[in-house]
Length: 86
Image (cartoon, rainbow, N blue to C red; front, top):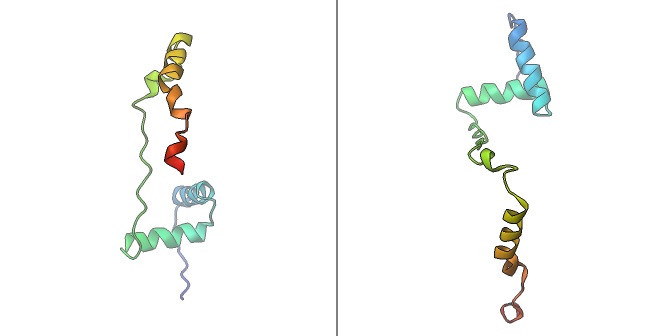
């Protein structure tokens, strides 16, 4: 295993590395190692988490009756068929 010093790293890049390390609960060194290995094709990149916002318009839009209708329609889901669990 070798060591490498990086000279000429600007303040913005260093700040971004430090932020990434905090976000990942990791060290700056571990972040740099991972990024270098990914850039060289030695480690697969993690797929980024997909952000879904297609249901945002529904949040908080139900009235009490909507909730009651939902509960009535799904009430059978909490019943256990004992014959299936023998």
